[in-house]
Length: 68
Length: 260
Image 1 (cartoon, rainbow over the protein chains, first blue to last red):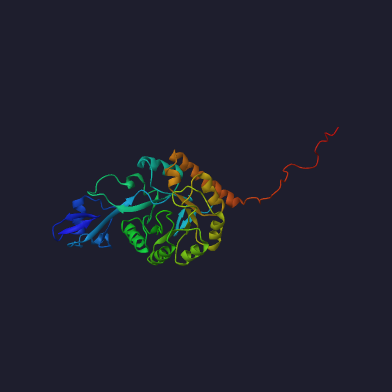
Image 2: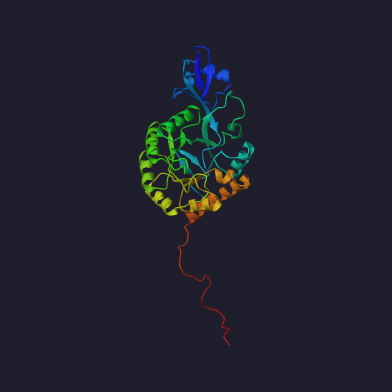
């Protein structure tokens, strides 16, 4: 199935979970947050939430900046 | 010297300076500047991780046992974007505090106060400690307080401009219109600007570029620490009143007679 992660197209096996996606991408869990189709996915649900065709995933972390 | 702490959403801070994490030449330079600033709160942006997700994180350079992280919604142009960003930050484990920015215009980066008010209401209702970046309007400050803002953060001048406190009278009006802490956010360019904000009676100052873009960020960070402390102390001490003409400091009696 095709999904979009942080704006990049990606091909994944059907049934891949959020947990599986993070592991595949090597993204650390601490201070990371995930939204699927604009809704925030709680960390406790990473293993349960299966991604579907066309899903748009955002994976974010803290970065430098913001204040002036 | 005894002073009360700055209280934000029930958390107490002895430092009244909040600093940013952007625009530094290196993460090491940022860490040193943070140290010199004496700040206890540092603000961070929320951004997409680069994929694949390796590489160093800014959090390798911020001791989170020592600094409170303040996620911000910089770059958000609608209440919806800002609200979703705040939820992401909370889920990321960055706590309940949020420096709320809803930007209305890319050139001035002035706030969209309508969106800001809406986002403040929603996030305060959902248990966030909302710290809205707003303009220097006492009426809007009051509305934000009524909407549940934990502090209000009026700009001194446009973000990143370094123009200083352009309208100290409005900042004073903001101070009189709300009972929550007032933190000047944006516009500070050098130490005297921070001192002015504190002399006006502000509860704190938030800055990034003034330190990060200084030729020597570590020295400027220390200058800002001292300026915030000096301004605070001067405010508490109560300045003398201004007079148009001179008043002699020495006695007028007993002056020797040199007339010939």
